[in-house]
Length: 382
Image (cartoon, rainbow, N blue to C red; front, side, top):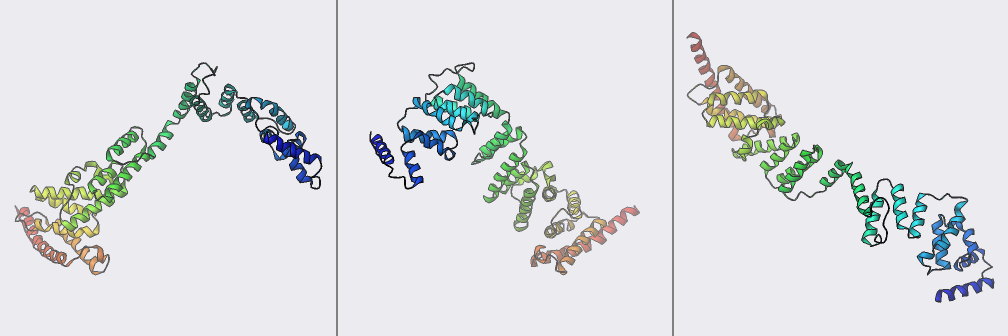
């Protein structure tokens, strides 16, 4: 009643021409009065038709019921029919305004081919209790289930893509969960996702100073870069402490050691120590020299390798032949020459203690060479 009284007052003032001095103001007043003709005059400001519908309903009958909207809809559509052709979305909106749920779902299924909109709309209507009185005629009264299954089927046609996106967002808060997700990736040949999981877990282990677990993760993903970094960390650790950690892992590297040169060297160097501890001195000496000749070891680790030859040179039994002794002397000369020339001075490990050991090594090699030549000559004479 208050709104009607307000509109009647506005209409009376307009008829008395109180606003005629300003045409624009007069147009505004005509809109407030809900005059039909003025909406046609300003239709360019209301495009499309449902904008005009909202305006007319607001200013002509703000309490209009949904069932009576059709009295306004036709006039609004007619106002634009000459300039604009009604499209498929207009038909869906018209059906919605007329509360024709069946037609909305049917048209939406045709217009939106991916099924997302119609599946979610139908599910929403179901949970709102709006489908209870509508038995949809697409083949079953369980139309909601049919549409959901249809949409799910369309997703499964791209199941790998959606699975990859899902796996990328799973929080890897434990190794058990990480292994489970990794197994899914490996079973489905999702190489990139598997590498990503291994990298995340490996980096976490490095931060927690669990080098053995970190190396396991990087070996599993065949990550050459990080496997090399960890192999160098193991070698640095050995240089500083004289001991290896995670011996079980290093002992059973197997073919995995071929992943990188540093990893190969780490595995072979550990094999040298096992041969030495088992008394296989000749095999240990051959392997040590092979590691130096192959240059798999980082240059800063050469001192360690050369010093490892010292106990073998001090054995009563001849371990290195004259040719092998010359090779060791050549490696020692190359290392000391590089040090004297100032190349990589800080990275070659020439501490005072190491220098003393190398002096002893040089003396041992000098003694071993004539010993080897003499023994080899004796053997040849025999």
